[in-house]
Length: 308
Image (tube, rainbow, N blue to C red; front, side, top):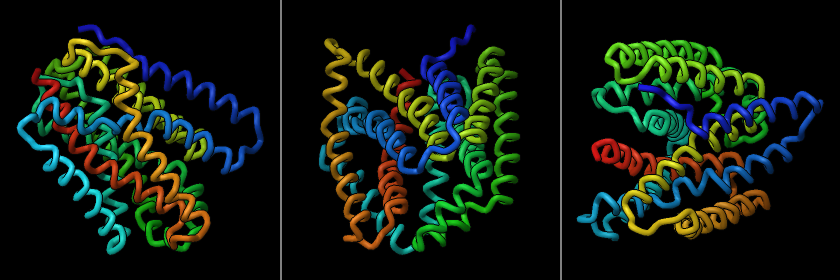
């Protein structure tokens, strides 16, 4: 069972070397410049990867009505917004957990012949290793960033450096044990085993060497969002008789456009102080309320994709 490196993994590796070279040759790159670069990648790749949840869902759930789907989807989003208003710290912690699990979902979407529990544990521990490494390595940078906004002070409790050092060690160890178990059960090849260790190590290294915004954007755009887009395209190409890259792009445009325009307007209102929420907190809320229903849809998608 020969394992081939995915194209998105290759792009991530090349991107890390390129970005590291650029930062090494410059003494300082402003926060505004980092946000602009991050925004370009998130708007062009990050947001579109969740823009066809409805299409993916209905391909395998034709018995569910359109009203039922959208009621469920938007009810989750509205409920999560309410949770952020009432319990911001716990909502932030929940967001980190959901994100960690969702990142693991896409990383191991092709793994079969393992128990559902084993896969879910691996998804969560891999994602926690990724996120805790980002928080631990960039703790000072995140602390400075969050301390600039009064509505982010309460969230700093969830960014405790000592806690994340322990979480990083425990989650990485548990994931390594799960990976060893998969190798023992022959669910993955030795090549895949060492590639996953190498890739996780490189993610850690990128977070250690790059500013938090750039490092996370590089990971999120290539290893996560682009990978999901490739999987969605390949899935729909198999399901539809006539399908092309151009049709796929047209599918992504409507909700990508609405998300970008809507989110952009809200961020502008925050920037102009027309709404009493900082742009950073508003960005976290917007991303989290999209991530929650998206991760649920993708969980069903991956489960049924592996059975087909």
